[in-house]
Length: 619
Image (cartoon, rainbow, N blue to C red; front, side):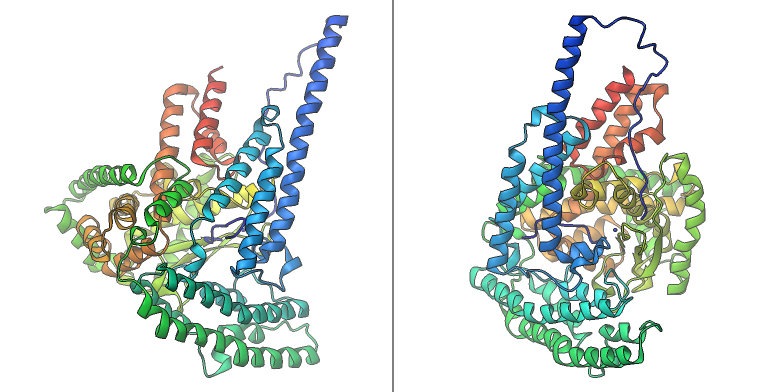
């Protein structure tokens, strides 16, 4: 159990986002003399304000202490935030001792925050208190469910993540000799940590807590890609190829020798050992079923995950029905596009047409990447029409690396460094172009880049008036809900002028509705992998390669797929409410500011906050 989990969709100089108060300086405060009674009231108010400030300051000190201790326990989190103090260590891999320390850590800080008088907090201080307390309680509750016994699957494979770091193309810096030595230290820890991972997986095998076979066979080629005979073909050798010219000849020679030796004696052996363990021991013990319902206490485990992912009290059955209703609604919207383009036939035939017609397939990977680049200028121009604050952080568009592209989703986002030293990265999957139709480009860009994940995450990181655990954390349903809500802004931002691109947006939304159906179907209703694939084929235009990778993604990370639609529906519901209640007073830029200005809040807290804002606007 980690004390704080980050989205690795993964973090620029600061933009202060603060609500503007109604500070009326036109009043003559000296117009009336202060009576003794007024002085007494004012003194009482001052004392009360000091008490409130005292509780808020005490809470702030708790957050700061928590954050510092958290970074030390989770050094990779520090690295991704540009904090280099722990770049030479990895932290615990989930050992029994490490899990006990993490639980004690959560309990300690829950006790500390419960010592604060909530009634004396308001505004940001109250939001921080509520979020911090809820997160610590959820961590403690989550100990009941043994995620540590299933540390690897094809979608979140720590060995893939480690290779990305070691390539020098991610958050791990390779700018100084010290940076290179830090990474060697981390490699040593990774080599030792394989024992912990394998022991945890064996514990899972003994207790019936194992991954589906269909997922683990996909892990084997991911590991095998790093079992190289030629050291120079290893991703871990890339930092040597790109060594700074400023290094002395002695350092270059020494580091090259050490990296070559480490890759030979540690990196390749640890990938080989995990590969052989999974192939020879784990896969034979893995399960043929797909969902959590088949695991010990799986129904309760999944319900816990659903609650944490969505930050709502919706049950899996309720979410399943929401999904079915949304699929039907979006199908009707798509029929409108069919009519607009003059297509004669059924919706299923339209799916086949848009999936297979050559006009919708990119000629090359380069053309696909360029299509995303071409959207930058247009959307950068129109974003200020809908947003009053634009983040400073930049981002790059990159193809997903070859070693993980077959099992990756269509796109993902990695956050920039908070200090601006590293841009965000919008990863585009260019594997199997036939599965990445041209009509997906605009909606995918809106979701991952502007005004989606890059925009929201960078804005949050650039906040200065919230504690670090909120700047760099957040609720999945808000983050992914915002991404999907961003897709719906296309026409307001000047895109979706091509009906097929709008169809692509509907297709993307349909996909998220389908996720509600199939995620709950797999993990709460016992659907098989094939039943999921059949449902997706019957209700969407997704190509087979995408259906397979997405179905296996739902199997690998239960409940995560629910976040998109549940979050989007809540944000859209709040916008509709604000438009109705405020009428001509409604300002879309101000609404978006209110949604984003406090970070990725739990949906229940977001709803309460926006309703209070609406009332304040009416007043």
